[in-house]
Image (cartoon, rainbow, N blue to C red; front, top):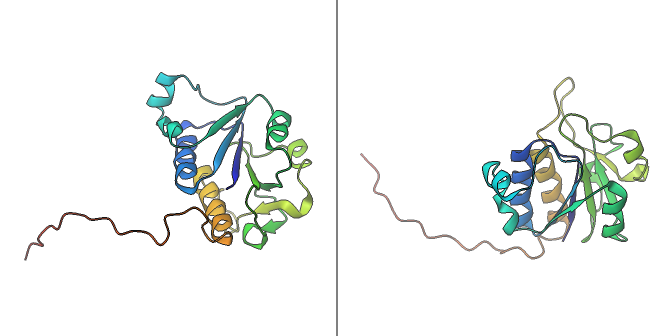
Length: 169
């Protein structure tokens, strides 16, 4: 459905949460090196990144390599200095959503790769720190997916059976 691109992510649990989001939304995750963590089997399991079997995860040596792999995908960046709110964008299947590292965001030379009208931001109250990376990705992915009628979702959701537990008086 969509491509999520994390540019030089640093915090393993954030990436693990994004992998789980990708698994649940049918998106593909692209990680652009250098990464702030190892992707060995042991490190992945310890960091909670073991959702990788549920969603496609691709690792790229550089942003140009990632963009080449994405082919003609429309690229949107999500950054605190974005020019438009994410909700004003019209997302299509196959679009790529680019997010920066947790502590540095996206460098100017990376933002130069994105057309000005596709540089998005998530509105926040003035003077506050940015949202957690995984939360920011979730907000934008679900808006993009909503705009595409949640294509591929188990919709309407099938109720899950849970054992009934008697309430105490």
